[in-house]
Image 1 (cartoon, rainbow over the protein chains, first blue to last red):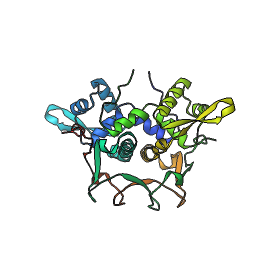
Image 2 (tube, chains in turn purple, red; image 1 turned 90 degrees about the horizontal axis):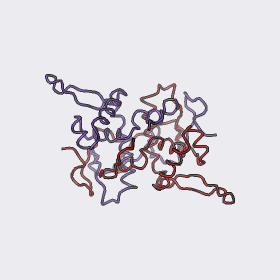
Image 3 (cartoon, chains in turn blue, green; image 1 turned 180 degrees about the horizontal axis):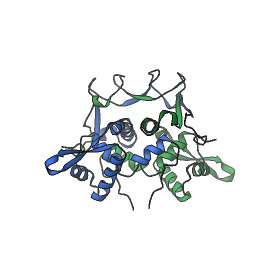
Image 4 (tube, one colour; image 1 turned 30 degrees about the vertical axis):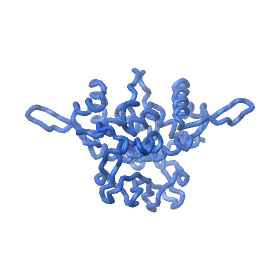
Length: 156
Length: 156
């Protein structure tokens, strides 16, 4: 079933999902953050059909999230690397991972730890306000129409 | 095309996507964070087919992310509310929104602002280390096998 498009929705989340919301794409990005670059290695690790992987990688390249990089020019071989726009997705990946760790695994079953090199802790993440620096809690947030609001973004 | 399941992958991200990675689900959660609770309001705002919305809400209830709540017992009416497990997804939603804002919209076109009530700033989010409190940058992070690692989580 062809999924509907979110392109007409005036929402940063919808537009982000339009680029990275397809099934498999986040796991491809996860592996890219782990340092995987080559088609065959993505394919082997994910056990994904080659035509689906080709489609997802092409979409990520078209979106400017990954780029093809020639690693053996004489043989015409390229691999796939995150661009700056792609690397900027890391907060999404690590907050998703943290939620999975905390709500879907028992502590003793968690697959991976994230290590903060500067303090050497196996750690988690809080969100901090860019303005005042304080840790942010959901109850402290509200939304307001932005400069590009059309009027139908928020429920009545 | 029936998508593959991620249930066999020992990864917190894969397990999270198994619950919230379907097309439309994140936008349903977005609206739930906006305060939408009723089926008809989700349906109207998203323009989603009723059978698809029913399927996605049922999955969210089955996953413990939303719960049915009787708002008019005499008429048997229920709506859908985020559980604690569901509300814990807010860092994923706001980091995804922030990436969309920063990479897919010009500043003057951004649909919504997020306001941090305690400092009154229209603000963004940094990730801070739960251990030392410092702002975390991608370059400072590494991954290590967790207590439940099977050995194939990280690439060779």
